[in-house]
Length: 234
Image (cartoon, rainbow, N blue to C red; front, side, top):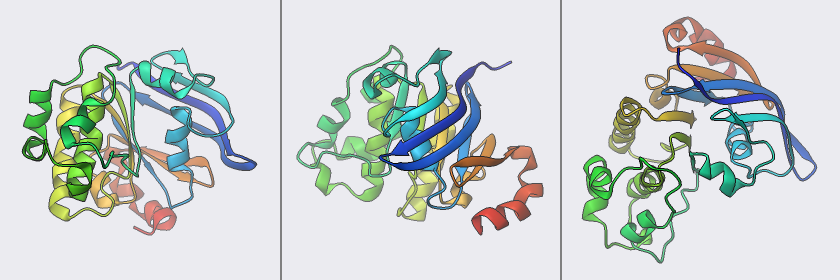
């Protein structure tokens, strides 16, 4: 039986006085790809940010690799082996692609080597000396993910990585996720692009109004399409 890497119980989170998460509960097993689905404003991005300690106040339980992390600062959460790729990517414009790639510290053994990263993302090898501002949207997204892979993180939280990208790049990102899963990575996806997320995930959690309202496995996807149409308009 696969071990749990992440378990969230009765998670509440606030930005200032705005109460965004209202008792979120879900778990992710080692080696899984899990997708959080929901409309904009449902609380999906806030859930990822709460896991890594980047919201305002939080209460409830966030267990990472078996350790309670609800009170840990963001840098300590990262050192447990968690990599967060935000929707805005966070590429430093004044640094080259290679400098961006090398910027985060190593947090655990087992991170990908530069050669392994370039094998997975050939574009980054070709653009190694290009400033961040000169990279295409797809290249910036690849770089944002590649940075995490070098650190040794084993749990990847990926927020809207397909947003605004050409279909050919989205397909490459799908291939990347499948390759990472094959290497034993555990991935939580927040995605608006249902066509991208649907074939990748082992399990789906549907969020609405800061709560998990439905969950189902990949094998149950077809029978849940009516419900998804209702919640997501897909």
